Image (cartoon, rainbow, N blue to C red; front, top):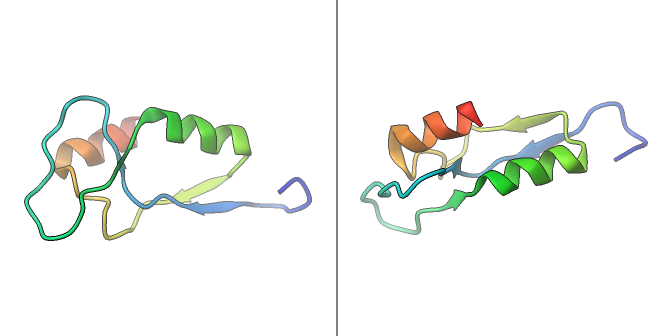
Length: 69
């Protein structure tokens, strides 16, 4: 990634900081810890996309935690 001008990563789901209940849905509820954000920063990504099918798996709290992280 050092040889490109800009890097983009697909951030599939939300960051969940506390014990937050997932929404009720069929299929798995995915989440990241704050360590995932640190790993992406360490890797040198410039942009993370958030528009994904699992982004709301932990409701508004998961969205808020992600944006605040």
